[in-house]
Length: 232
Image (cartoon, rainbow, N blue to C red; front, side):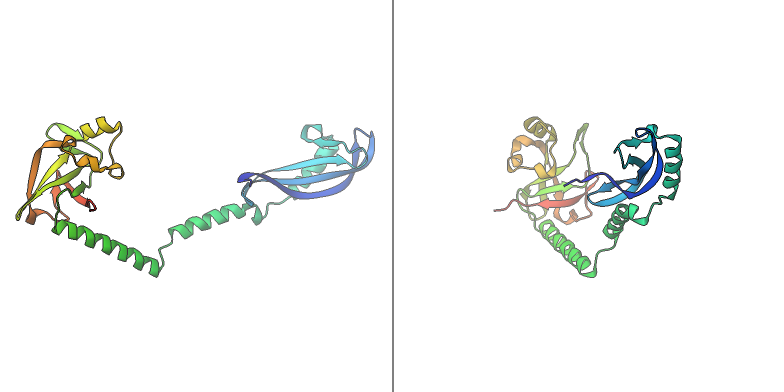
């Protein structure tokens, strides 16, 4: 299937005119064409008009620079008569309609479904926040984590190493070690179980009181935006 290209559409008219090949006046077919850019089968916009001429007796074809003054005069008149129609812009209307449709607000049922999904996700997040477990991974909503004079990027995360009645102890991922081992920058979607190991974590732990950890708690000046829990 042709995805895009140039399409031609027009009409043909027989007009008596001098044919240089026949060296006399003959009936010549003047074909008037509109060349349009198209996507699939839909014309998007016109590019230019074109007039082709062919003698009905000798079948010689003439284009542009081969026109005689008489052919040029006739083609100029036919070109002016050839009008663009709204169908030459069908593709643009379709594309504009799709863009407008994509930007329309979701239907009531779709909005309800999105709301339910958001509520479910928040409920799961709040549950994990209220009941921390060993090896929970807390992702921070920021691009860089700065510890002392060192910066670790792009996705900062902490790992729960110990939970007591009143506090939670975290280790901080060592991005430098992760980058050395993996050969690329670590992102959340590339997080692997092996990264829980001590070899990938900073030696110093941080400890935060349980009653100080909420969805709005700032850790390294950043909020917690997701908690991943290892599936058992």
